[in-house]
Image 1: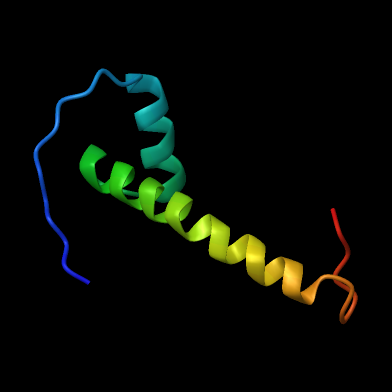
Image 2: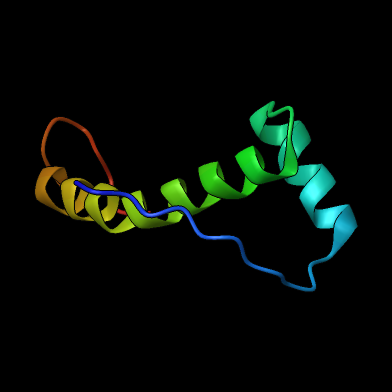
Length: 62
């Protein structure tokens, strides 16, 4: 997969970024935002996997 890095300017909540940095243990704001986007992109795959195992082996629908 080819990745293009592009500089962007956004107005973001500084306190939220700092919280995300602390939760994810990142050193930079850019790293925190990139990891956050990775998590969001992965979320549908995770949910689909959970649907597939729902009701099997003690996994309960929450």
